[in-house]
Length: 509
Ligand code: AMP
Ligand code: MG
Image (cartoon, rainbow, N blue to C red):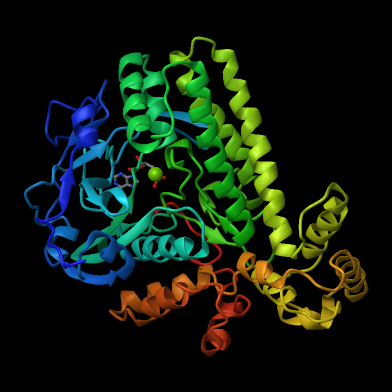
């Protein structure tokens, strides 16, 4: 594809043309009833500098690295018609009313060979949905979003993508631990890309305000463009469409389980209608296999969004989406079918995910005790999830000594129990686990919390080499890449155990 400029992209305005919008352009934070969006211009950045660029997303759009003026929100071109989306959501289990894009501004939709993609700037200034906040984003959270969304893509986990990270040259003040110590940090803008940024909350807001007409219009628009195999003329069609969303969500969460990803803030406004991982905030990766772990300090006491509860929260969130479609149903009782289908889909995908991780031909009911005992053993002493499964993929005999690097304190390892379990597994697979499948289910490299933190600390000193190295490394998470083993295929270092940004993250971003 020849190199395009932003002017020559094929801009489209499907969402703006087909759904109702705010009469006012920009304006102060306020309630904006009966609309799906508000037109808003990004704020110019004093000194935009391109820092990270996704070659693959650039190629998808036909763009070469550069364009910092546009990607920071400082400049616009013909064809762009920028807006912030209005949505609501349940935050930590409670209805929060209108939320919306408080610090995300969509530049527009672009026709590409891969279909239409929405380009959105995160951190380019305030919108009518900013409430009391500034609409800006800091470098650390922007690096985390850029690296993690691209890493997730290469892991095969459904996700929104990132095109670029630009620093703005402006200081943004944040109180990282919400403890009365605000400090200036470098500001940044990520341009992220997805078929759309519609969320469960995009539908909830209209149902919650009794605006059936806008709800119906948004559903029609969504299905027409994003679910072309579906129609929603009757309850059968609506149920089939919702079952598709339920299955996509279940698939995404089974993938999270597989790679040890904890989203951290599974509020309904952070649930993509496409089943994509969206809104990278205080997410984290399991180091030791602890289903109770959450990286989000804001959720530390209740642990609502802990690793082991993500599938249940997925169901809870689907139930909220279903309630919001209720007003369009002739027989709302039928929505229960969708919830049942979510559980069935999750069960199916999660089980086949485990079959892959364990190298089984298929997962039979009789395999359940093997899996349950594995999950219990993994928690007995501190055991690194990623290293454990990666080494399991290549052991030649069922002996725990080959898995030693996974244990934080080898002297504590319950050797006999492990050897017993390994022997059962070995017999189950006849000494021939499906190694190729295992190596594709068990990544060698993931964006461990301390790895992202090292990239951030270097970048805050103007050194983007660590971020670049990690970006390259994580393009092949299933590759051996022996040259990177010593540095990145290892357990969490001691310094990272209780460090802010590694084991603890707040929503401050
Ligand atoms: P999140 O939990 O990050 O997905 O954000 C929840 C809500 O807060 C969304 O409506 C965001 O747009 C909004 N928000 C988060 N950070 C900011 C910010 N710095 N400025 C304005 N709005 C924000
Ligand atoms: Mg959000």
